[in-house]
Image (cartoon, rainbow, N blue to C red; front, top):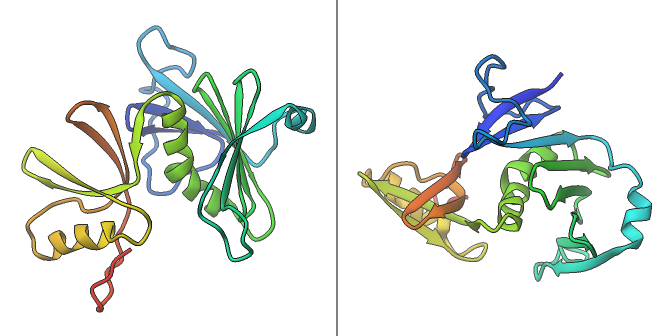
Length: 208
């Protein structure tokens, strides 16, 4: 069984149910392979590795190494790509691995160790789709935001800079709406899309 979801202006076709997203009825959703009408569809398959994975990894080149380290001193993320640019592999030190094709229509992922399907889905809706969009040439920001009438303000910064805390402060002051964006995507100047998540606010004033 597969589920279809609207995510920004994409249609996600996934083999797992994704919590917090509303499924699209099959009768009303566009065909996955129908690009002639401008439908942008992404086929997501979780739980199995790509065919001939080991042979492909021999031909990979390192494209990115995260400056952030885990408790063992290893970069939290490495990205490898095939020389022909057809596929990128995202390897996280927590046991999650994703593959994104250069055509921008397929994502595959697996988990190992202490990681779970819940972790995989969380990363899929956050950094993985953010990287996926960036590989398509679309600008993505790790940010929080609030809206004021027809305008939006985006707070950008490294982890711990206070993005969520700043957005939560506006919410508590009742001066802004939707302070829940974990990453933003800009399609055209002045046009912002975001993925919403719940912000946890603590008595000390810090939020995440």
